[in-house]
Length: 184
Image 1: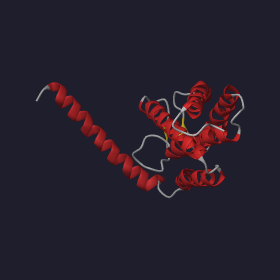
Image 2: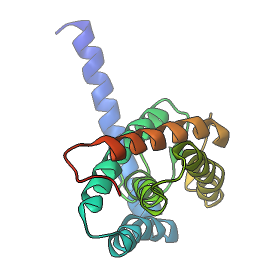
Image 3: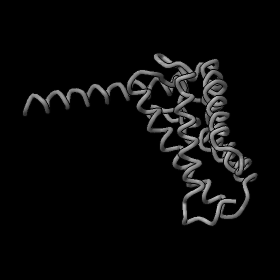
Image 4: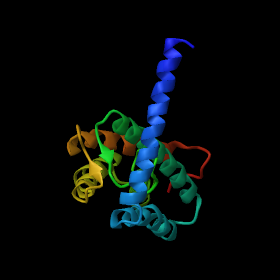
């Protein structure tokens, strides 16, 4: 076996051991804590609220498409930030996913979808700035205050241009996807 294969296999074995250790930590210190229950709440309830409040026409399909895109972008960026040691999450709903499931797959996409639905004709740049400021300077600090989010080498303000870009991408796809009925 080549040296490269040995190094790769050794690294995989170390990673597997760390994942087993992380599972034990999650079972003993995270599972069923108030922060874990809060994560479960944030994973389910916003979707139920969104479902009840959203219009039942082609807009729902368009918004779900955009929400899925926002989720993909959020998860990808969150994994990168976590893997590069810029931040990490202390209390995960799902133990081996390095991102905060409720933030990436619920809170971010639903907030974007609500912004797009509630004010469809408002200036998208203004909406993106409001969204970015709220998520970066209110949402992130609240999760930091609750000891869920730990920005190791990250400042809340760094997220603002990223959040603006995510919203503008979502807005673009919401407005331009031709397979959906016209945007109202």
